[in-house]
Length: 287
Length: 320
Image 1 (cartoon, chains in turn red, yellow):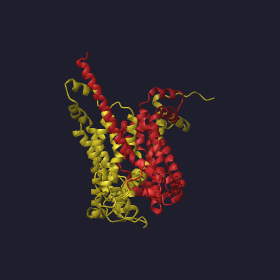
Image 2 (cartoon, chains in turn orange, purple):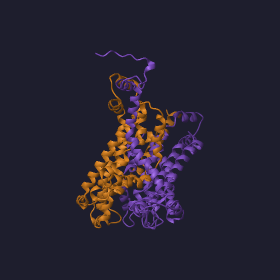
Image 3 (cartoon, helix red, strand yellow):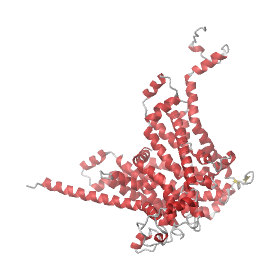
Image 4 (cartoon, chains in turn yellow, orange):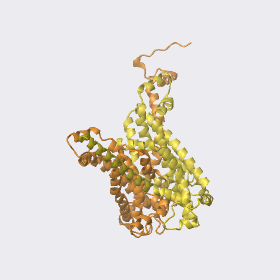
């Protein structure tokens, strides 16, 4: 015997399945459209000259031409660009985490007259657009003799308002007992920062470091201004210059080079996507 | 063997005249808070010194430079008063650049917000592979601008570009995206939507998840339908987030550089020249340092005005 509730129940199951399928349909469509430029870049990078020139386009090249990668790699000192990018990104990241963590610890854990006013000064720097500083910073570095040096690329960008803010929040949430116990054992502030504050807030520090990695790897404007020889260029700059300098490069080569630049950020992103996305979401809803 | 010393509380002043230097030193170090203060200063010093040199000094120096004429080669800048600002007001390229920047900022907002909200609503349910969809849609956000600009230059290629395919299906001839003055900004808008959609979606998603479930339950008890739940609870609760996203996108457009530098170089005929690119060009291509400084000051004032307006307006009409 079929009851009324039975029918409505069945209908709602069917409805739910349809709504599921629709949802998946929408999301698959969006993912494909958004992922297509990546696919198109990879597919093009393996094509021959002839296949690149075809329209409608060939989705899958008939043969994977790895020599396209060899060709761009030898067209310019790419290993140099890679080296410069890795060095400046990592050193900048480490310095910014250190500088940010030190000041965050001070603001979270040490009493000082007018501490909150000083913290507002830190926050105020976030309102000053970085583009303002291009000319003055260029001149400062020229006086220091740091033009076209790794430290010239790195140092102007290691002060950290965002990191100070983020880590201060994290340090404030650590129970005071832990610090009291360490103090009894005679630990100073530096030891408390290294042995208590940083290890406990490791997830926050890691998320911060991930953001910094991506931001510094992608940097374009400042490294463009402050470097002026091939051997000091970072990847994004080198990539664009290779294309401009080498008239004989085809789109397959340009796409191969672009992939070489994008690969590290894409790998880091997909390995840590949950952490990165949740970090973004948390920051925005609170802030 | 030294005698144990006793201090009376009232007599702890290290600088009282009849004290030895050794005692003074001991008393100073005994003052724990003094040590604390030193630690505080030492810990904030690196950040504050760097802020001083690379953030606050540039602001002051830039302000000064904006009243001068200088090519970075002459030994010192020449004072010319307000000339740079006067030039700016009469500079047709400045107004064009400002217009382009506003066009880029506003042209993508509506589409981005609607699409992002729709996707966030779909994603805001228990679905298999939810994380994977979210990651793919978000992935363009953090990609290297220079590389992405090259990929899109290729996609927008008039004859061989991928974008010609859907346009062909619709029976539309592909415009000459990057060399037709009417299509450069729309081309940049397409790239901006592609790059920003996932970010907007993630923010909306977080907003949706922060709406208390009791609100919906209470409304449902009152017999509210799905659409009216959306209309009267979801949308108002998301207004602060929408507002945040609009402001972020305007400030983002004010700072666009790499896409323009790589895809169009600001051309043709300044049709895609945006603010930061114009500052860069004046400073490092034309070596008009004073003029670039004046442009930077205006950028600073605009950004500040937007930020202040944001906090004011948010208080007035956004539902919290």
